[in-house]
Length: 406
View (cartoon, rainbow, N blue to C red):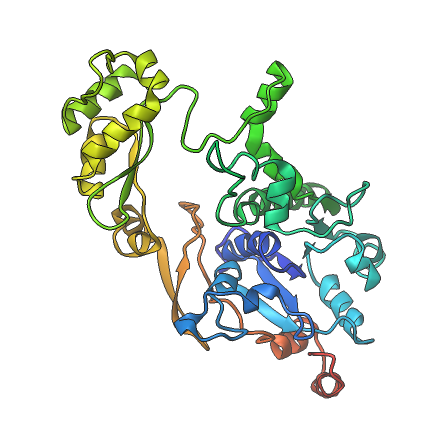
């Protein structure tokens, strides 16, 4: 761990659920010591979120929670107990970073807001990842990934033209734009602190990184006054473009044709595409104008193919294509992920051997590593209190008996 790029950085992690937990996981996997502050009185709701190992529910058996919290330690601390905030302050005093993704005002109620913290830890780096930022008319609105996707317009653009908004099938803002922007902001603040000795407050509004995904829609409106609409797999230029059936139950391949050369390669592999004698499919304009009819013809041709075999042949000819994979395919069939050793098995104290995603970034000199599986609730409370905070055993036992570590 000492060779990892963030070794020596300690994070007091008050985040929960998706985006916040994933942000601090990125730091932990790259060597930071992340101490997750939790309480049984108000648990991270991911702990009670399926899927559960062996379909047996339990606060330490959630695969969703496990994937978001590798390489961390967990301390159980009831901040509503009179002694709780004092212990949290002691942890913060020995940390480089404080992270939370609560509604603005939550940390302040415990005396743990940024203005409180800098009175005893002047150089702290403090990130707050609320839904809409720390100020403004909507700042205190409560939200989750689904809410953020709706507010930003991501939901509006997801789905078929003639159907209501479908969304992305998952809380997409929690998994990509927000944790990645949060981690980048923290790395920038760490670099600044190393140059100047100064900490700072990071106010990340989770709606704003998600809006950054919608550049074309924003530009189209600002330049043309046109509101982008749902279009399913349709595209303003490519045709054919979509997911087409293959042999087997619910097997599909995605294909996108952007130019005449790709079209010729597609026909050479699938065979000449018939249809109306009045339509010359060699003409890109004709393909795009009649793309719905063309989709049906392409689907009839792909239906007899094995999806992976067809993808291999199309890719060899420069045709953008990909098998529509299931989770089983990703784990058992994807040769590229296997080559990159993407799947890592770790021994969890309650779940046994469990599968985790490797960090998707490969550094040649300091490769990241999953140092430990996700922690049990409060698994490291005693360890952190005695070894990190320097608490004496009698004091720890007294506080535990008083219910501080619930």
